[in-house]
Length: 584
Image (cartoon, rainbow, N blue to C red; front, side, top):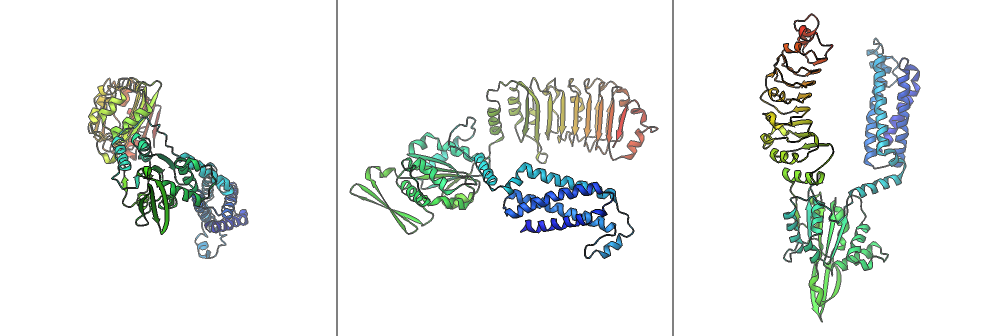
């Protein structure tokens, strides 16, 4: 319905553009481009309306087109009003308001170009995301769903080699599955995506105690797109492989699995169930129902165990030899992001919620996966985000002999990281360092690699001037202090400091007022940028001694600052030797 109404609106807009095309003198080129682009959208909406797709991608694209159409209407209507050619009903009074206003052709041209760019982007997104294929090709939608399922597919194979912090969790889950006293028929693992539910279930599934306790094991990845028949066939393949060659309807599958699970000791893992109703679809094969839906009567007669299962008033009778009836017992281990699934499966069952790993455990896993031997070769770049103990981090990084680029980022509401004073970067090849962390005091220069070439500090909130430490790093050629990296008022660059520095960027230092540069400091500096430092009073006298300077960029909302540094200004002598001085 939405596509139909929108198509109608686009059609009307198209008619308007065609009808009034002669009126757009002066913006003819932009007008024709817009009309061509709008025609492409017409075709898209016609296909979308014809197919009646419920795809989220199609719906989102339709919303974007809707906004473009409305904006196009506004621009065209305004232009026509200004030309006193508005023919839309209810516009007479508005035409009078614009009677004395000349059309702003430049603005309409810019607006039309902007709309064309937006349309081009929507069309590009449609192509890259396959929206058009979704609309015109039902088979593409099916193949897309199949690809999504394949991407989410999980397997029972235990191939994880970098497991940390799971031992106690695995032990607890195994206990609930194999202990005779535990009456929980369904054991659940719930939690957000990526927390490790599947990994934990896989460890339990492959545990030696579980393998010895259950006669049959079945693993099924359910996920978002599944069919009940596929799930039941997968379970039957493991629980009753002797029957798998038989062609069965869903009813026959349900009956066969119900009887098998009533007589065999099996563990069924249902991984990644999304919705409560998904469980309802799968559940009929299990002899144990919810609440009072099922009760069983065990009768021993002539060495035969007769099990009468009453399920929703349906009586099913299973006969077993007496010598094997003690092995009866099936259980389900399911994983889901939705705790409601676990409650639907068994309101009184055991629900396990994994905890997030500690920062130390996360770092250990990261190190084992990325650097299994710790003796790596080649250039390395690492980006670390999150809270870590600096001593632990320093110890780990020191083993990476080929680490050249390092970024550490952590600033939740300016809460200090634990052990920041323990930061020691003993990395032989480290050349580029980016720290976006709260640390009111900068570590001493001996804690940095002597051959460091680039350093960038942000969000540090340093209380003391960082220059006395940084200027002693003799190989530095680029320094950036930005976004509250320094919260003090005064900075001093000393004689002999920064002997190799070529580029200096000082940005967003809101409390910085005074800068002193001594003669002999930064003798090789070529480019200086001052941006958004509102309290800085003036550039230092010492700039006149830096004859290597080629560019100075000053981006400040301070007219007096610019006036003093311009030719004839009182501070012009500080920058008169610099070829390029720009004020923005």
